[in-house]
Length: 183
Image (cartoon, rainbow, N blue to C red; front, side, top):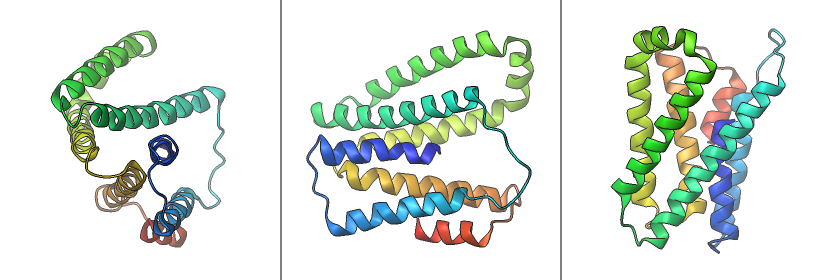
């Protein structure tokens, strides 16, 4: 669902930044959406209950990720490609402070244990996320949003699938494999 959030800056590029939508872009976005749908289909397994809390968190993640990507693109256009480092530092400081406060409120009891056990994984994820965001800033003035964000979205899906297959030894269904190829 998080990968769907990149639809926000894609459509902002088309609707607000007046980027052209050629037939190949429309076909590409359609294939990406079909890809995302197929990848997220699950066979009949145990029933998973979707709670309101889960829905709120997913919605906030969706809007937050899509909004951040949109702000990155607009900031780079308005500043003619300058202030990448400053933008990243401010964004990361705000993220760290916000997440630290949320963790203190919701997970204070297990915070130290989680940090000790998960620090290497958190660090790898943080560095990867930082690199992706840096590349977004670098490409923001060189590539239309309506092209850049679908490529990032598909790249995220492919990376996740490769990690799932090779690290976690997960088996993908035929529909999921087709979805990855369409992406």
